[in-house]
Amino acid sequence: MLEKVVLIIDKRKEQSVKYKKILENSDMTVIIASDFAKALNMMNSFEPELIMISDSLDFNIKEAIKQIRVLTYNTRPVVIALSKSNHIQDKIDILDSGADDFLSEPININEFKARITAHLRRNLENCFSEKTMLFTSKISYKMVKRVLNNNKEWAAMLIDIDNLEFYKEIYGELATDKLLQTYSAIIKSAIDSDDYLGQIAEDDFIVITNYEKAERIANYLVYAFDTVVSKFYSETDAKRGFVFMHGDDEAENKVNLVSTSIGIISNKYKKYNDLKQAISSLITTHKLAKYKTGSSYVFERPKISADNAVEIPELNNNILIAEPDEALSVLLEATARLQGYNVKVVNEYEEIFEILKEYNPAVIILDAGNTETLKGLETCEKLKLENPKIKSNIIFTTTIHDKELVLNAGADLYLPKPYELSVMFGWIKKFIEDYNS
Image 1 (tube, rainbow, N blue to C red):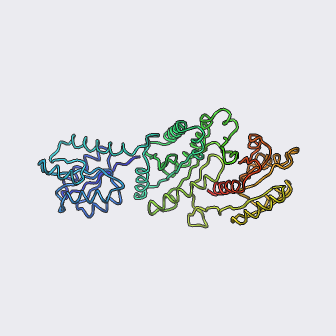
Image 2 (image 1 turned 30 degrees about the vertical axis):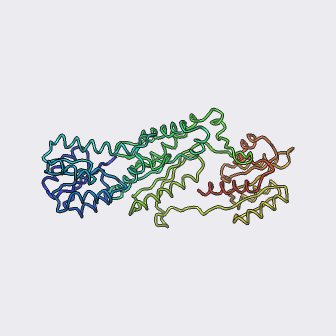
């Protein structure tokens, strides 16, 4: 669905219409401006890939080209000058003013089409990602802006790979590139020629399609991604379902396998007035998908009681502390409250499940307890493995030096005792941010 827009700035009506027909036969969208002031407005609205400007205007062509270069600094369109002059000095002067090419009229139709096509090809080749061979943010944002300007129904999908930075740290850049390339191929297979696929960041893809297809595409991507993702991990990591990340002071962080999150917006029920509003809504909807565990998607839908708004959950600063050492428990509680967290403390493991009926902590600090009974380990298993609805991050503090046993029980962080308070609250801050991101 990559639309190649050409702007013709030409006072001569017959000649500009002739050029328009030639280019439209080559699958280009052509717009015409008969004066320079009108052309400036069109440049801002349509952000054309190529601008043809004739010296027939009542405006100095060299000055016009200089202004075009300044006003289109971010989009950098190809600029071609049209002139009946064939003098070398005229060509040099216009090229020096910023034009990419100079065409002397009359020009052979086949040569004209070939030159325009070649310029557009080279212009677009500079906008590809070397890793995925998809268009980068420069083109992607332009495509979103264009669909906002037409009257057709559309849907935009922001597609992300979660935990990719951790995957890269463990498995390296080559494996990460292969994962990105595989997912881009999966997305390509889910869309057709009427759709657009590009990137706005290394692991952020954007698809522009129609309302009817968007959810079907999202369902397929979630299924396909989860089907292939295990192939990018070692057999041990894939079977375990998470990987270990080393932290400070021998702390071990459990990181889930990569997943995909997809946010979808559409103009079917809500009108978007500009690019900033559309991208902001797309990012907000995508964040809602990231709240869920594993691969998922969220479609922004209208609400009867609201103005088509996406509701954002309130920030969760709740901490639950289960620490049998009374002195340490008091110290943790006091420090947490001083840092602005909401805190509840329990003395018995059984109390945790009663409190969780009414209290939703973002972080649970859970101590292993007696090394003979391993009551804390048993509680951790019940919290995470037997209660999948509990989304709290569990920091497991222990003198048990078996990090795999602890993390396999469902803990998100293995933190051996004794530990520094600064280390503990560094992890609390991270988990609170992750929970609310």
